[in-house]
Length: 286
Length: 66
Image 1 (cartoon, rainbow over the protein chains, first blue to last red):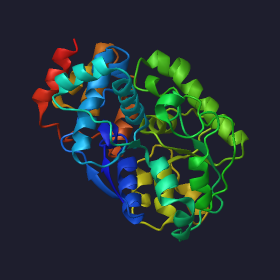
Image 2 (tube, rainbow over the protein chains, first blue to last red; image 1 turned 30 degrees about the vertical axis):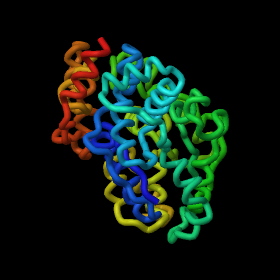
Image 3 (cartoon, one colour; image 1 turned 90 degrees about the vertical axis):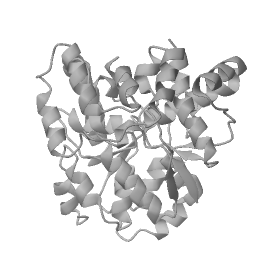
Image 4 (tube, each protein chain N blue to C red; image 1 turned 60 degrees about the vertical axis):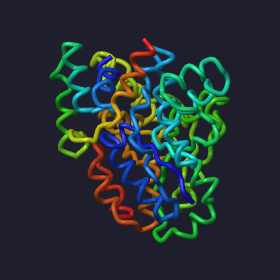
């Protein structure tokens, strides 16, 4: 299958391993990616918390560019995904806004392509069975909890993705790889990611506490690692954990690549802050 | 706003630049250096990411949504 690809700003920098692992996994699963021509930032939190029209126009510029390729677009970053879905939602709902944005961006928005995140594409278009068949190294002994974060699923009528209280798609993907997925109640709790690069008193006051909560609950659930699908969650969990509990965090695509025996994981995990090599070597996975 | 000015310059976020800008604006450049340096060492701060070519279209969006 062929889809357009919108990496977004993070995947070129702090989320580099996500970009690399998404590309490797897509190739292995027969998903051809075509990066959108000359894309620009989706605006993320900065735009939507300061200027509504800007927050719709910035993603719209990319959606209009993506429509030229006439394919659905894969958006790995949860923030970008959320902003794209939000823009789509508003453009479809409000004709006046749509006309205005089209005039500003300089192009027509048809609304004919779907905005998908990679969990959804792998789960629905590739399928769990097909994925399972390609596993060469079962992730035995790995006990992840699936951390979806808040932006992929909420608001539900905008994101149109998995169940917003108890999503299961990533859990099923991990289970297909042979991992012992642990259920827990913190799948969609916010990690405090937007505080991560901010005022240090916020980081120390709230940020660390939020990450600590997630890490502690993960351990209580019997997990030895966390799996994420958002570059901000990943950066936050990875960089801002306290000495209290510190479990390795992976992008779900890194684990898929590991299970499929693809080259790359050893390099990608070196980019993480919390070293996962002791865990993976002890399980014979590295 | 460091974020948005970043987009006005290159169409995309240049994370290292933005972090520095933000830290300078908030008057606190050094307390987070440890994390910044550690990320740099692990290859996470891309200083030379490509920029959006059609900058006029991006600037136009900012202009018209003021």
